[in-house]
Image 1 (cartoon, rainbow, N blue to C red):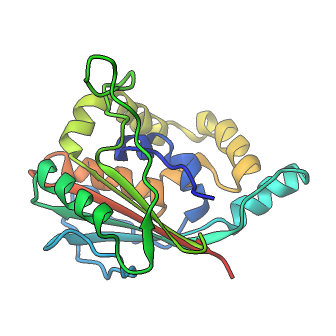
Image 2 (cartoon, rainbow, N blue to C red):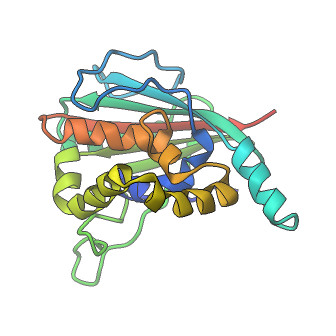
Length: 237
């Protein structure tokens, strides 16, 4: 069955603490102001030409699913999965990236087929937007599966400057939480760890998938560069 994921990188950021909690650890911690060092891309999925991979973080659902099952033995959980979150940057414009995504959909990489589902336009022909002004129709998102649905690839593209303009309060809340004393974060972290196996502090760490995305968006929002987020996952054997 095709899995449903967020339709924009902004939505991925908002839901990152839940969607990426399973992937804590593995990335290299880097101050947001430091220039990134090129990273090796572990996926054979093609990125936009001349884009640069700046961060790779492994994901693995085993720990999170184990905690959920321990809390609720009757919970229906999908198969464990593992893979990577790959973050790249490019000087390409958003129209160029949308054209690239359209080409990928019409000619998917070998062994994959397009499973993208997008929302519909409103009766006035304009795109639906959520309360933060973020396009939720998914023109900047595509997803693919292999024949037996044992591998999924999700590609998100975004302009970090636009995300910062539209979702500034969200980043302010994230920064405020990270800066709060342990006595204030403690109860929330404890509750999250009981539910997912990870604290919110861990999820927002730059070595986790969600934290890595946030760190790169912060860095790129002051540059004339676009972001590409590729999530390549497969069922754990």
